[in-house]
Length: 274
Image (cartoon, rainbow, N blue to C red; front, side):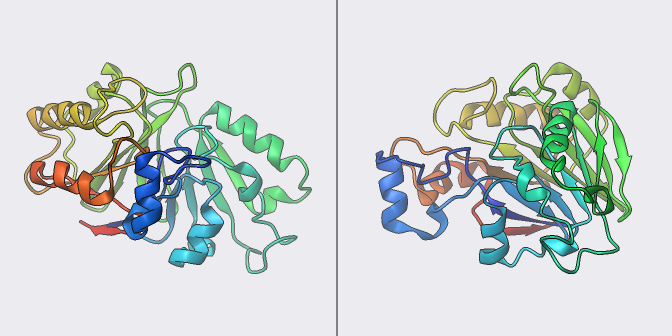
């Protein structure tokens, strides 16, 4: 399996909209890996996680082939993860080459409501997109052979925001954004599972956040508990993503803090194979 990160920022991007803080000014100065768009990731070539308003940019900048995407998993309804108006452009009225194939979209009840509202102006949307509502801890199997389980995140309650376990053949990964330290019901579902790849929310960076989002200290707590449970080991790749502008952090400074602890620091356009 492989995962490609197309966006690795929090909701305001980095440099952030309208912002002149030190972190944003440094990102503008140095560019490159310091420029972060809203979160999105692709597993192999056909399973996409989240659909932010930057998706069109990701397709142009990083050659994301949206016509190859068969399954779309949405974590929660915040605009930086779910922009349904653009998803509904997948019809013959706006996109040639979509005839005869369908995109299967999965998400919670809040996401379903938002999707239905956006789709209501398209008379033929059902010919191109199929929505399936997920409940916490549901497991589905996709046409491409992925087994996907939705776990509860600690984020934006009372909405049931999701983390995802994604498994295919003998490989298994955990995608854990946006969340604080996991709820106990989610820890219970992780018992007995071993992951080749784990992607963790690190929005807060050096700020000590444990609810809603995580920073360095909370990520360490999650890693340590997963190690104790046998969910991860020395062969597991752990990548941090979903960063928010803060203090004087740059990509290199995050790497200086976290690489010595064994973490990978994701950036827009990076890819990991496992």
